[in-house]
Image (cartoon, rainbow, N blue to C red; front, side, top):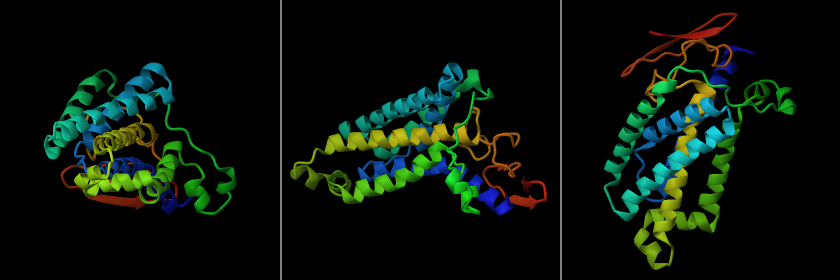
Amino acid sequence: MDFTTQLLIAAISAGTPLLLATLGGILNERAGIIQLGAEGLMLMGAVTTCIVYIRSGNLLLALLAAIAVTAVLGMVHSFLCVTLRANQTMSGLAMTLFGSGLSAYLGKSISGLPLPGTSPKLNLTWLQGIPVIGDIFGRLDYLTWFSLLLVLVLHLLIHHTSWGLHLRAVGDNPATADVMGIRVQLIRYSYVTAGAALIGLAGADMVLAYAPTWNEGLTRPSAGLPSDSSSLPDGIRCARFSAPTSSVRWTHSDSASSCLAA
């Protein structure tokens, strides 16, 4: 497996949390609600996954717990913005601050502890025989495939179903949608909650597939990166960044590839 293939595998794995969080944000925006609390939701999803997975050893339970916790936070955001008509920007920023602080407090007892496992891989043996494509897509984890399929599902939902038509109507002009008999508040509650759950799942994926341990401030550029290459795809030795600016220098050798922060 050459360096370029290894880099693409690492990019897909690292991009899965961003894709899930983006899809969650799209549901929020389509419903007409600004979601600026994504970072807090991702942190809550990550710390919940770590706590439940370490204590129970059950991956499915950990994922469900992360989805449930962030869905509740999404309902809180909906209540503030839809029912109480609070400022959406302030509510989102408050969600980020709340999630960052609470996740840091809850994660103190498990900080640095390794998870019992990582996200399982989906081995597509029929695909692995295809050059390059098989190397990249033949052993992706389940959450990565779920995120890719979700792109298609949400596209069909939003643009080719009556539910999606109602969602777009609520987001574009809620007053007109209300006159047409569409239940604006119910749709906004539903999609904002679902979007928050997807963002929480993105946080769970960060600790399962990319950095299988909890570190405070996991969403910061350097906090979520492991100190060794055991949890990274083959060939990617390290990728360290330093905020607020960073430059990365990639080096390649016959045995492995590494990146060094300049």
